[in-house]
Amino acid sequence: MRSMAGLRGALIVLEGADRAGKSTQARLLVDTLRERGHRAEGLRFPERTTEIGKLIGSYLEKKNNIEDHTVHLLFSANRWEQVPMIKEKLASGVTLVVDRYAFSGVAFTSSKENFSLKWCKQPDVGLPKPDLILFLNLSLEAAAARGGFGNERYETNDFQVQVHKRYRELMEDKSLNWKLVDASQSVDDVLKVITELSEGAIEEAKTRTIGKLWVEE
Ligand SMILES: Nc1ncnc2c1ncn2[C@@H]1O[C@H](COP(=O)(O)OP(=O)(O)OP(=O)(O)O)[C@@H](O)[C@H]1O
Ligand SMILES: [Mg+2]
Image (cartoon, rainbow, N blue to C red):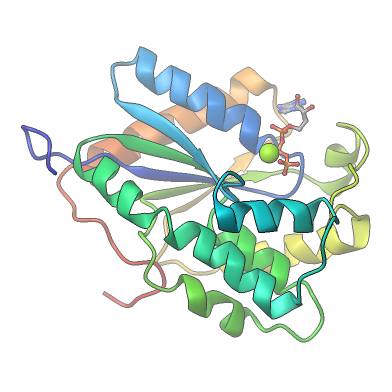
């Protein structure tokens, strides 16, 4: 499972509210890290191609309705089903750049009425802990300037305001390596910042074992 040198890859997560540029930057970051000689691959959540992912996809497209707790658990299961692959890749020295992770799951569900942050975090406790979480920070106004909402579930202004608040609460957890990135900059400038932060995380991850998310060490 380990590469010859025994050095693992880093788990790098991109988070941020809608239209902050996560998917744009995830793609470019993988390309840039590869150009710099790293082995890097991209992942995204939800991963809509699996059986669970298909249910989530049609939920987001409003083609089906799933009870709120149930869909939260499906989003979490959609991450867990990728964990064996994630661990293998990291152990073999591949750095993974992930477009949304458990933080999105928690920020979104806990923005619904009667969902506590504590309850929402439980299903994701123990997932591979990111070595770096890049939070692409963009005001709702700046996000709106990037085009209107689509038709997917959650794509409304009031809901996004609440999601921002929840992300801020999650970022108070200092046991996680959150980096706040100004996402209002140009695509190239954001990429420069996150590339440097990623280089640092890759270096630091090499000799450290992968942690468990939201588990005291
Ligand atoms: N730095 C930037 N400046 C201006 N526009 C940008 C920037 N980054 C991305 N965009 C544009 O903003 C839109 C949203 O970008 P992108 O899809 O990468 O965001 P996202 O965070 O993945 O959104 P979602 O949460 O909806 O998946 C796209 O049209 C993209 O081209
Ligand atoms: Mg996206």
